[in-house]
Length: 562
Image (tube, rainbow, N blue to C red):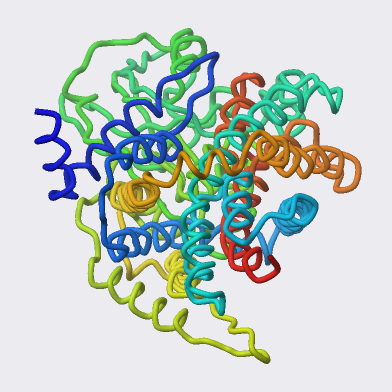
């Protein structure tokens, strides 16, 4: 029975591939003391175990899936990467570049001091920086290098073992160093720092004389009595009557008929108005001045929640307080802001700035949302259909560019097809953020390409390397673990003090900046949990977009210098 199972797995490679995904995605989410291995590490470990029986998988399989992954990463990171280089995020981008240099330097120092070969160096680099995509570029660079065939084979054998060990250490190390020890080392009271940051940019305080940021809203019906203070006022005046709280009147029942409200309509005694606004405002303010009534027909307004991709130059860097004054925002409420390659949620506060490339989630009537989208950017109504021709063209163009080789003396320099696809993805992702008429790739599609592309690549690597993993672990030994801790911890430790004292990032976001520069999503999760706020994520997105590209491309550099 067991022999039949092993034979079936060896002759039908699709079974062990998907079995690796099954185990990886299941075990990767198991948390111990609040920390999990993650899908990538768990998939690799599962594939390494399954691969012990000897499974032969064509290397073409991993390249195909890796192309999907790199395009998805570049396409998602493009808007934030460009913005980080050429606008307000330049300081965070420069910080990320510096941390990337420290990460490369610490690995190179460890490799030189320990005397490791190029295969171990590449695995140590990709794992300690938790940059899985660098593993593929490193492998490609080794295969295309001038090394002897025996040296290439030895590197390919030991590289996955070095990567798996150092990836686990790098992931857990980022959580411990940045999420747990970081606030103590910098002497930061993280929850207090976030509260103070929120107050300074308008997130708290008794500011009743000014319009507030947009809120999640509800709609209620109120009767205008003859003695009411709003009888005789226009709809526009009424909407600013209650201490300038943000609300709007959508429809009015007059003489039994329901009509659409306009800003200039004068309210009369006996009217029933449908007012939408923050729940607490309608209960505490409006409810004291007007009598609430039940009118299902009046409140039966068609609404939707839709994404708007911010592309307009006139909106770039404007605060929510400023945008709330614009007539185009009447009737819509902001419920979410997402920024960057990882769609990091940004706090909705009066002084929060919107940037080109941000995606905002708004709720309201379709006509009001369409009016706002016409001023702000591109109305990105969700659809399940992706532009497959666009994806195919991008991968083809990127692979052709990356296949070009420049020789300096006897040393061949090339981006590799993988590096070319990543860069083209970055370019096209940025172009779509400012000209969104082409290249529709839904978030679900992008997530699927990202997650399945990477983990299928990792599964092939693990299955192929399985038979040699035990020998590799014996060869690396305990000393390799120590060198990995050194290579992973040194740049993170230095980044904490450089971010706080050299770049002078605010205490509330400095840890987020450090996590972004190390592409450490697990660390960011720990930081925001301990802060009790999403504010640290403000410092994450630009650093992540910058570092995810640079750390990946440095996978080629570590091969060349080793």
